[in-house]
Length: 353
Image 1 (cartoon, rainbow, N blue to C red):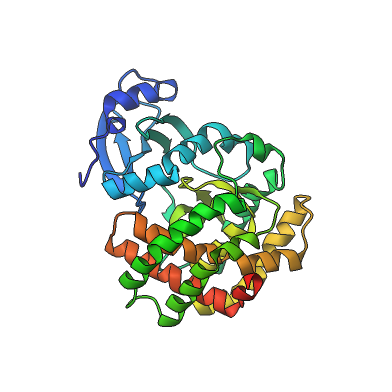
Image 2: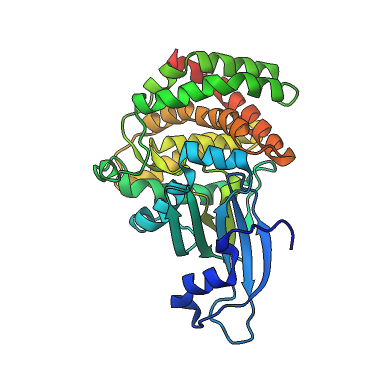
């Protein structure tokens, strides 16, 4: 069955109890367990049940902590298990974004342990960060960004959600310190995978990181903060493309354009981004306006220019915190190169000089 976690959440006993309200049976019999996804901070499995007794549920996706100690340590530092479980238990229903249904959520703070049992989207194709997006996929994904951002854009409710990390210059100081501490290791590991021009850009970014965070817009909303292809499930919907957004381990209150710049910068080759970015940014802005959000095209474009930088920062920090894999290194190199060139093309540094 591959590399299967021994976590209690992957057991017939646990899942029978967790799913009792919807399964229609007292005991579910597991037929197969297969690792799925490319996540590096947690483990996800497709659990299929025997259908001999006519159970109402054929399969689920179960997410549990990583078995890698580096990733477990990183999860405690970033609170990612707490954030994802809190998103599903307290915030998901206040938003319009399309996610898999959550059947069960459990989190234990002292041990930083969790179990998520989610709907299995069997007809979906996971996006591929390295291959990149089609413009049709990107357009469908931006619809979901608006569904995520619009409901709490600039809302006072954000302050009342005590567990939700909120951008501020004070909070960003910790991220800046972390970035400074890991950049030299990143530059060394990726010296043959990331262009020297973009490594130099990273050095300048690290030296001015406080200015970068001080340049952020003040209006916040609920942001995914890791909105990229690997975290999107594409489903056929007639002649359209449906999108389910997964992996809410980084959710926080940020300017909405941080997700937009991150997604566009990471999802295309450099030439593809240059071809499509103005159209996609304008589409995002117009869809926000349709939701009665008071924004201007110039305002969102300036924020997009600034906030695509978050993708380069993620590539630096995440690559040095989570367990190292060949695909992970390839993905982080692609992110750094794409977002670095995005910053150079858009003259992002001028916005926080």
